[in-house]
Amino acid sequence: MIIILPWAVEAQGKLVTSQKSVIIPAGSYTPFFITKSDKPLKIASFKMDETAVTNVEFLEFVKANAQWRKSKINRLFADSNYLKNWEGDLDIGAANKNIYNSPVVYVSWFAAKAYSEWKNKQLPTVAQWELAANGRPKNIKYKTLTDYILGWYEKPNPPILPNVKSTYQNEYGLYDMHGLIWEWTFNFNSFIGSTDTRGNTQVDANNFCAGGAVNVKNKADYASFMRYSYRGSLKGNYCIGNLGFRCVQNLTSHD
Image (cartoon, rainbow, N blue to C red; front, side):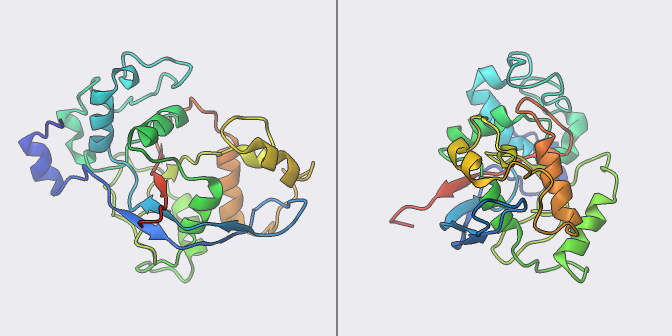
């Protein structure tokens, strides 16, 4: 059960305590790094949460899963920054009333994966995330989505992270795919062809050229280069102040 204090409701309006998922149609994903086959990958249709997971949602998770609380977390699974902006194990904090409905950050890949599984969902693969994030924006004042992304990259992190749905919505009904936070993906560093268990390593090893780290499709695509470089710099236990996540689900025959 989530305990919502009156001041939190007043400050935040309607809190995001459960996610609405939207269907992302099947499509193709062209890897940023040159592959041996050099062909786009076909992506089956899937569901994705319309926003990043919020602090209030993650609070529900840690209440139900004591091993993921600040004081109990194993440092193999999260570094010392884990939930550092929360006041306590089960307390986001009265001083943090403005972030109840903001994306949860300072969470590791392991914590994000555990949350997703608790919700009977998964973290999106890089291909799924990129396909979904490439949806046409509905309400940005920039000529292109790339211009918008580059404009966001140039700005410093705000001292107080804005609430979800504070940037733009894209054609699929997803909010804040760019412009609010960076987001974990299931196989966030698999593009370098590692033997990491977070990706389909057999596919990774077969697909990518030996020089894949420098052979990219479009060297002028600075926005993508920054995004993939950022992913490649991460480790699974990192907890960073502008890095959160959202979840996906595979479609069933009933969807």
